[in-house]
Length: 412
Image 1 (tube, helix red, strand yellow):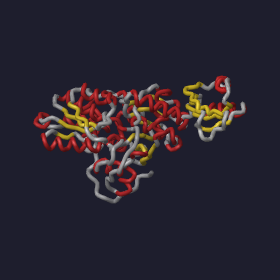
Image 2 (cartoon, rainbow, N blue to C red):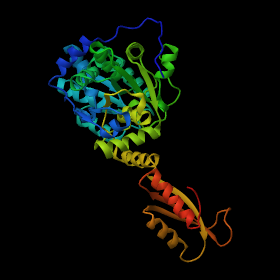
Image 3 (spheres, rainbow, N blue to C red):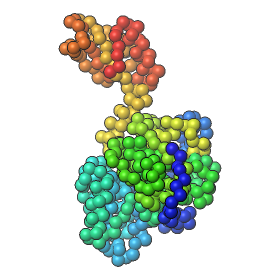
């Protein structure tokens, strides 16, 4: 969707100078992450596409940039009271490491569903982790209450100018590494990263198109932009926990209104496909939230004028979720095929089916027999198979071969 012009008063936006100041502060703290060319995306777009690999950043995401900028600018007295944050995982790790580097205590509230590796990593950086609530919304409330009760300083994941400026240093690096960039594509949850990147990029290159990408099952910006104010989502359901934020803030909404050219959404299938693409083609381990920009390019490559830079924003993924998402991505890419075949219930029937599948090069992952289905005649058996194929064309070839062999074939 295009971002509408909303004639309402906006809070002051982060400037390019603010981002440059944050960059000087972070010079010896964060990694200058690499820009990798993606031939697979370039072939689709028709011009150069680069991946800005923030999954290789310290703590596995860009969040250390904003967290360190914010905490470093607290007074000594404020740091002595400690800091508190709420996060599904990436901001938690950024705050925990930044607090340790700056010598202050950190308490982090995380949803009950937070991935275990992210919880463990946050604790390993020295923060006290408290689990509670089903989503980040509840964790944010608990963190805010803790700050009021204890005097700790609340480090918001996106709704603060210092956090936005810190995240914006990603945009400065993009301009330095790809001076002729035409389009920058960035994931968006609460909007801190895309706000900062847009502030940095537009200050130097107002002609560059900045596109924000949200998971369509957790897309708070479209409704908020239409209303001209933050509008919370009633519910969210996405594998991309890192961008599952129910509402932007006033500050991030103002940045997106004023600086971001377009907000797009991607489906769960798009995210799965992009995660698998990054694994197979770019050799990058990236979490679902982190591949949102890649997902948008894969879903509609003609919408992005090259040279394109897609920010790959985080690599902290639970191995269990990785396995599930890879399987989901392979299914979305036509690499898995589920079929049901009705065959005579006699010795050798299953062997015949398997022989046909072997002849056409399909790898059998799962087989089930069913003799008692209501749609089966006496003397018939239904065989359910899950196959690994080389893609949609091969899947069609497998189905056609079974049909030619005389089997009644239906999708599984």
